[in-house]
Length: 181
Length: 90
Image (cartoon, rainbow over all chains, first blue to last red; front, side):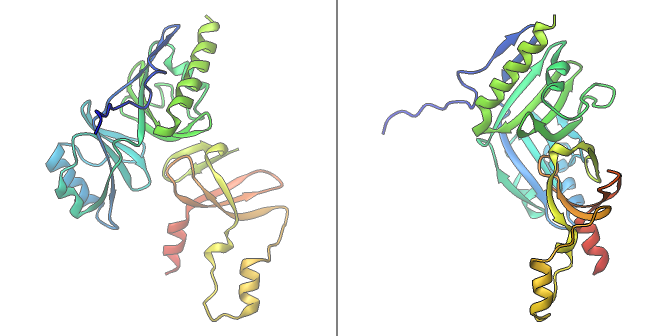
């Protein structure tokens, strides 16, 4: 059998630097969705904290840090990004490996907020959307997840099949923001 | 138009999918008879004014919501998790 070469979702379309904003694909490691069984959210959170050092995030929030982060991912669901999820958590929650299902991109730079303002119908300014805050929302016409990593930095997740659309939409918005000077 | 999702907060209408009248929460019993099922499946009023509808927060948290709004004034009076409505009836 031939040698298989892994290709990342945004290979060939990212990175992009336009104006003062950079869009760069990131490798988050394992991605596991954690959906606690009915009434077991607390037990699942305790198990996650014992295994990986962070509890399950509340709605619109993240826990953990770079390399091992739990991102709120919808109603009664979180996405563990980084380590392989400890099997102990599976006693209290449904775990699904989603490692190859998402394209992950960081958007950073002084105008990153302005770029996202053209794509996302949520107020992502730092006054209301602080570091560690996250939102399941739209990026133009795509469902996705947006998380603030720092003052000028965001993590964007969309379905892997939408990677090229994401790169295209980001490019258009970055060009439009840069054109305003 | 903005809807305040009980989980996510105030969000743009684009994130939501409109399902229609909240009649789906009042499913008749299996033996309720032809008339009750005909009403449930097919018959809808189309009044102008206060409505009680099901919306899906499709691009957000994924929750089904019961939205009370007025189609003549565009006021939104309340948004509740459909699950909370169903549980309150049990």
